[in-house]
Image (cartoon, rainbow, N blue to C red; front, top):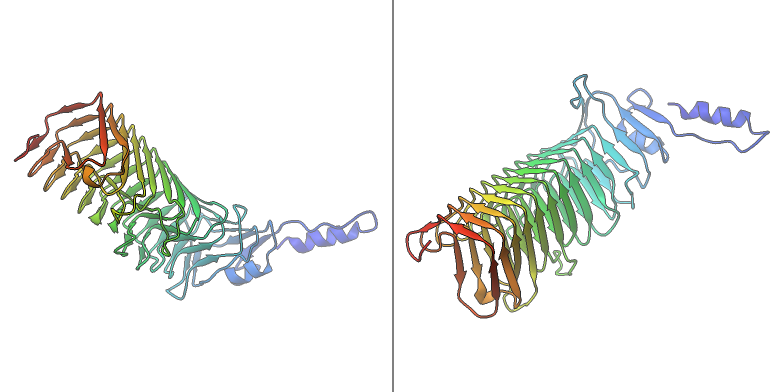
Length: 402
């Protein structure tokens, strides 16, 4: 521990000026026997360096300090330090308004009743593996506060019971970003909220250069976006997904890849959405739960590829009950629906009363087992759908036309 020497140096110069206490490196277990003890001994700016090995600790709380808590790397760059809560509680609880100056990095975080729980706080989480955590999933961001920055992390094999967001979940106005992360094999058990991989529940989420694959949820196997939080307070949940792969996810009820509901907004740009399966909306979908509530749920898809997805209806895209889709410069191909709308199924009967569009897209090789191999529009006059400069070819259906 280096602070003592710094303090002594400061005191020796006291006759010429004010002493200064510099940031220290606190080594675990050399300087402090546990991570919790190191956090207690730390001050803003300190670095807690944890030696290689497995540490059985839980409920680690920075207490508002801007400190770095970091593990050790092996010679090949892999992670050598594990914190295992053994289901004694959450691994980390960050709830004192911490900002990005509170850093968690180079750690395996496992065995928690939630891996990292943030309430009204926004730490930086980087180069971590977050795995085999339950109840609140891998990372949970709750309440308004600074943006949580999550970069270059592997988030895998976590589950969220009754909350949604098996990999990463959020609620009530939280803001977080995922950059360069792999989010795979997570499960969100909530029947209403979904989000096997990621749940943006009444919150704002930015996803860039990520892989979201093989996750399972009731709604939004890969990503679920809710306009409302759990108390029906409106926080305009939004997700912005760029340059990412959303593949092989399952939405048991709705939305294999991405599902946007209840006034939320989903924007996808330059993404690959493939191999997903949903009860409806294999690739992406949007709706409002109550057709009597005219709340627009927005879905923007641009410069994407939507391919090889499957669903009961809307193999590639499914929109109903208040959805406002805008699909442009996108390839929608080789998707299939057990009933109708191999490429896209749109229920105009309940559509939000505005003009929606499908523009400059290629829609080919899709299959509807019953009707509308390419596009199927359900009857009604509330909504308008604008088609412009699309290529629609080679789609098939057993009845009702290609």
